View 1: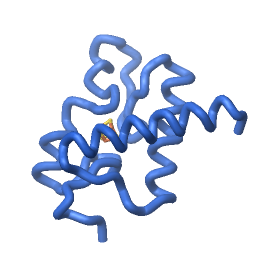
View 2: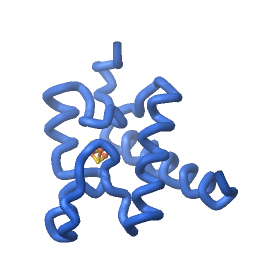
View 3: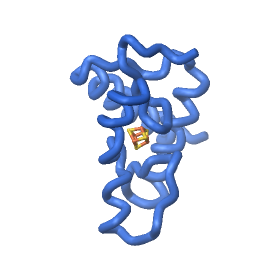
View 4: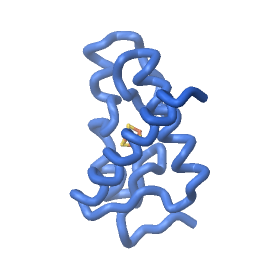
Length: 98
Ligand code: SF4
């Protein structure tokens, strides 16, 4: 991994932490799993120009795929209902992962 890639990941992680804080959520406390999601977001940003969700399939249609740019349109309902978003990046504070 290049220095630039590391820096990109660090930026996304910082953004995600701030976003979680703003919503009174927490990021996945499992560092390894967190890293996988952050790496996937950074990779998509590099490859496709947007931080598309690494856990969902892109259709290739930019308009449709706008729905899955992190934070996707589904995450609030998922966190509320399931305790975490589909990628398990964001968690409700009272719903720690098993
Ligand atoms: S499921 Fe989570 S990680 Fe994936 S785009 Fe939605 S908020 Fe981001």
